[in-house]
Image (cartoon, rainbow, N blue to C red; front, side):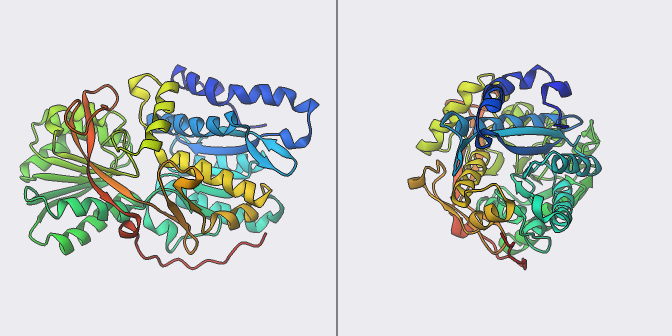
Length: 440
């Protein structure tokens, strides 16, 4: 196989534990493959992600989460198909966080015969992959691929750019912003807002949806700044922090992720900026430690779940994850990746094949409930646009040990407590998708 393993890519010891837990067990299975039937061959999942470059830490977090989800399936015997159970195998393809490199890695995955593509860190990359998968599937109907998206949240991807070969397992930017606005709408402290976001499709959408929803829910709020900055290229955000402070903002709204968020909040702290941060991703990857005491009661995040979320079934899954990854800096857990892998397995078993169109037909419209083993409760893959419908949780930063904060984030001494739960039917948004159904 032309794809190289994570260790061979020299990504360092941080992923060795993940490799041992998620991949090494598969090597034993592969060692038996020569003596077993074809049915025992792994079902490969191509993770196309930035494993090097400015967002490598975000890519590593994805690898840990997907590796954990894959290992859970394999430990219970793998995917049950007609010819016998088959394990899953996660294969990493390093996009370096670049569109062109991601397209090259997609071609390599196709050449390697990998039927399922997973990606999420960058809506720009996701948009390019959707187009490329569409072309590949039209050109190679006998070797079609399915694209499973865990965090690229530009709404266009399930609206005007929707595809029968693309499924999104994360709430899109407008859904997330609407959830955050439920809390902002009743927060009298919010009077002067500064918007700062990464300059690409996702960041622009965050800014747009913030302006629209603030206008509808809080017309009294003044937007005192609206700024876009280069993606992944800023190491020193102090000039931006100075501008936010000079504008007199009491609240910063940002969709920044990875180091672009960590460096921004660190600069804000160093500048003595007395403003709350309303974020999509402020609950991990170094942000809580960078914010520190200034974030108590002032920093919000939105996700499908968080470590103090209080859902017993997901608490048990999170405990499994922490047992595998006990180091505090590796505790950034994304529940939706477990849901993605479990729903894929259910679709594979229902389709009784790995053929992309057959699996897609089972995923579209799938309901995955607590009674069926979903630790998040009930979710629904809306068939018209392939956008997962699920509840969202808005949480606010607080000190470890305060009410509702039994766990901190990355050993920072700060965690998040639930502020508002937005039910799936309220988090849902209309769509403009029009797409044909794939033919098995």
